[in-house]
Amino acid sequence: MFQALDPLLHSELRLAVMSILVGVEQADFVFLRTETNATAGNLSVQLDKLQKAGYIAIEKTFKGKMPRTVCRITPAGIAAFEAYVEALKGYIDAR
Amino acid sequence: MFQALDPLLHSELRLAVMSILVGVEQADFVFLRTETNATAGNLSVQLDKLQKAGYIAIEKTFKGKMPRTVCRITPAGIAAFEAYVEALKGYIDAR
DNA sequence: TTTATTTGGTTTATAAAATAAACTACTTTA
DNA sequence: TAAAGTAGTTTATTTTATAAACCAAATAAA
Image (cartoon, rainbow over all chains, first blue to last red; front, side):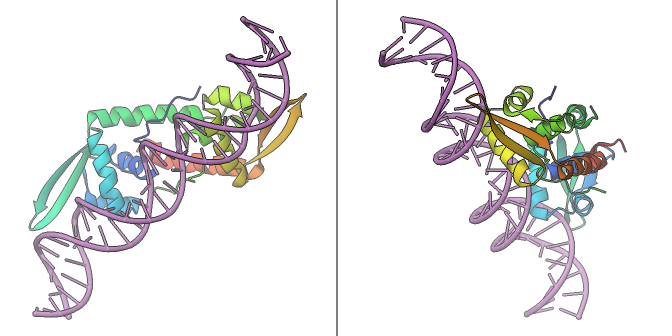
């Protein structure tokens, strides 16, 4: 009845990040930070975890002289997000 | 865009417990344990948190000589569960 | 009958996670 | 050139989740 929830996605901030990334081509650190209202430290840590899980790809470049971190979701990330949503439905659907 | 998720409900086991209780009159410890596949220790701790939050009421009785722990959701618990589901939708809805 | 084993839990200890605070490196503005 | 801002990372602390150990009573087995 209750399917296990992917612990990597069952985190408020990581879920918010994935929710954004699943709908856009790419998003940079600053955008993710303002959209989620996360602290930079927390966001940095959570992005790292998503990347290590293979759910997102992170590209570090420079925009002029300032660093720029661009994230995009991977196919594995999309699949994991969809599976998470399906599993969640077992918990929140009216019964 | 992303509403905060009630941390008391954003826990796999507590969410499963609430999901069960929202649909039944009451449920005892043994039933919750078998339905959720949780360990007794974990269930004991999480039920305690839900009770302290006022989301469930716990009644301890004896069935013959064996202890029996019966749980039921409170109005506050129902409201919290519904609010949690609404907030979640902001994260998982197709966009 | 006394010794396992099971039931229905609680308590305590450990591991993992989230978060905040401090820090780095560099840039821009006053 | 000193102060403040940008874009992050690292480290430390707190909170959570989970597992393991334990307790008291009941039942089953030797």
